[in-house]
Length: 343
Image (cartoon, one colour):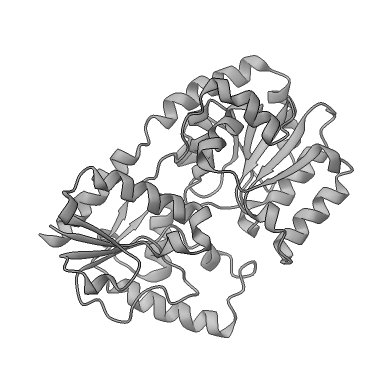
């Protein structure tokens, strides 16, 4: 069995996002289970490679990321369909809607679809009409590495980290609900706790509505000096930033998986998460959940900030939960689907 995997996400803006992390980590894990000549990475036309199967580890509903024809058996990874579930917040336009119909038609012709969670699998079935037996749930894992303890003081200085902070890692898409987190933070009666935001978007400062909404929420918070925007942080530094955080918060309206939740748990950081999308499946019993439609996040933050006992219990539970997700397991499940398709 010889596999050709398209690595295009590693040469686009996706390389610093979840799709890039998935592609990198999957490749690394798969290399250990294939002989050198059985697994080929390609940025060009994967069908020009001598292979039994082609894997596209990405899918965008509004861009033509898939070819018109699949000359060889093909597998496609669809991480989520959040833009299709929330069209008001992700307007596709006429061209986008047309491309979605084309992408949907092409994806239906794949031999199998991989996705990150049961939540996403359900959406793929209902929104794309793909039979359930063709959809395979293959969970992800943390992509961060442990940081040597002796380096942590240097990293704290490098990133100007405060002594006590709530952490958020990710983008500013509507579904991330970052303004909601900032508004809850603004209500905290706690001048010693800061909010640290990590993600490439915070350095780029794009002139898009989602980022402007974040800037507006920061200005309205009356705590702009307590809110830090770090920009992109490499994965070998990110573990330390999670580890030093007092709390990690994932305030999303919806998620296809929720990698930062696992990353925080692996690093020993207590997690507060919304109860939407796939997040409860990822966090299990190791997080404190809230409904982002209700105005109770501030109270939950205050409760955990005030109790080291509660935070330590979450840390212990989170370390155990994170161990359930490994890239070796992701690679094995992926290879099982490869074998099923090629057989």
